[in-house]
Picture (cartoon, rainbow, N blue to C red):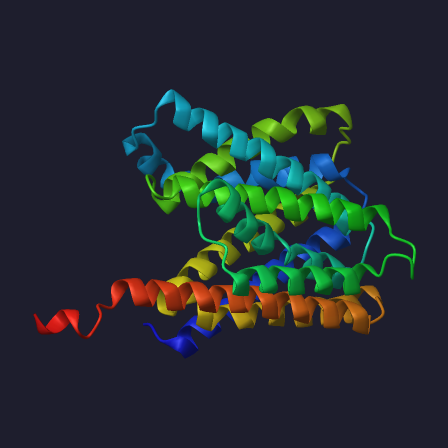
Length: 296
């Protein structure tokens, strides 16, 4: 099945899955150190990528390819550690809102490193997204928590990771990219986890397995959303993840609703939705021939 409503439905479900990740990690709290929790999340998540190993065996990877996938795993692993740390420091809604900055990093990085054209409209959208981030952080108006700085590192790391995935997707399928990320990240995180290791309780292990399940399901439903409808259609539904995050924070963890976070997050989502819409329009122009050309 495909169509705008189907795509929006899958994207809404994606948001719920990722909020499930956040809520479960928040419930674990600091019972497990962030680097160890990040390692266990990916190590346990290997269960869900075992069916994709056949695709990896069929791929012809060069030494350079292995190096690129390894670098991506290191960059993503750093982002994951800082994300887990931020979850122990700041409200869920703020983590969600600041994570929206990753697509902005992808947009700027694609222009700097992949040679994509950064038109005025995209530059304006990036500036609007940064204004949204400033509304969330409000530097000089309130004290900035280390968790906010951690999320800035996370957004930068995830953005760089997604940018590398975009580059690698020109030669490899989604299964290969997902499997290698799932293999490299726990390898990168292992030394950090060992240095602060605390034997996790069975409850914590079960919770981290649930985190891995939510995350895997979220990436799968996101893929289904992109298949069902254009990104320009599904992207606005991303804002609902912020709504779910606010509700979960209020109902489960007693976190107050911060109108600045909701407003700033909405501005960032609007900016990245505009970028997605513009990219879809440009692709359509490339694919659709000029009417005059069809009359030859």
